Image 1 (cartoon, rainbow, N blue to C red):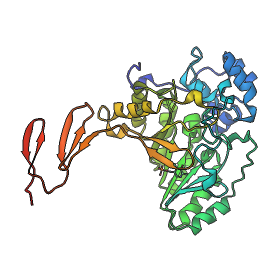
Image 2 (spheres, rainbow, N blue to C red; image 1 turned 45 degrees about the horizontal axis):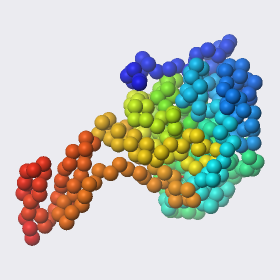
Image 3 (cartoon, rainbow, N blue to C red; image 1 turned 90 degrees about the horizontal axis):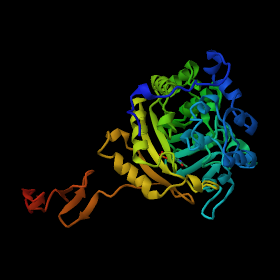
Image 4 (cartoon, rainbow, N blue to C red; image 1 turned 30 degrees about the horizontal axis):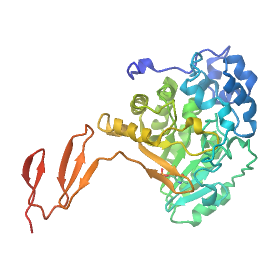
Length: 396
Ligand SMILES: *Cc1c(COP(=O)(O)O)cnc(C)c1O
């Protein structure tokens, strides 16, 4: 399906757009100002399907539409099912809420310690610093609050959240998210990271951001300075499909790592977009080429209006099974379900253990071959492997 993952085949975001100077195109503020946010503008650039047109018209009170020119240019205009297009252009299906779906699918509201701060795990917290993004993913877990389409009235108070973190000495890991933290100005980010760095028990600071993917131009020398000043700052980016791995993203991830930022990736398993082994293999190979370690693969949360994106849970297991052993160990993400009702992330793994007996563990490798290993260091006279007896220890 993919003609190899050589960088020769990677896209460049600056395709056809109209008259724009390279200096504007490369300026993230220009990208923000020129985002596509309404139907007329979108239709002037792309022939929409009826489902999409209706989606754009009706979606206003649910989750705003916004697409940066850079990301828009990655769309294959001839393909209604283009994986880029489906991630950011609303469809009328989003207005249908199915019985299993929830507004707050992973139960964040119940774990909010103070506004904007979710403290669910013992040693770490999620700090929501803004409710805006450069572009809006149509399957957003926080669609209840981001883009402010539903009147959530989100007013994060940095000082209250910082005070909570200061007072809770068990918090050693702070994850900044939102919305997208990289939409804060350099000055605000500098302040926030500086304050967090001053808290002695905070050992680990990370940012969840899709800005490198939607708007790689944001990774400026000034932002590099901020990361260098307060580092190490870790970052999880969000790439779902190999087509998103462009030359521009390559350059942005290079600038981030040069600023001392280790990079991970979180993908969401999306039906018809990346729910097959070939697409995921291509994606994770490209991520490694960009210095990005695949971290999580998420089963899509039960967010209202997203049934058309959700796929069979077994697909995710099949995908990680198809990666493990067949591809670099570094390329295999952990597949998880963020449990409805606030259970947190639960790992789902292919089954490699066939049996545990009194004396040994019976396993299957990635090719389905069976192997055995003594269960404990003691208490075993011999064990069998592939029909051959091995002395394994002295029975005491
Ligand atoms: C995902 C998440 C974290 C971070 O979890 P890790 O498994 O450490 O990456 C922390 N808090 C909340 C509420 C989260 O949803």
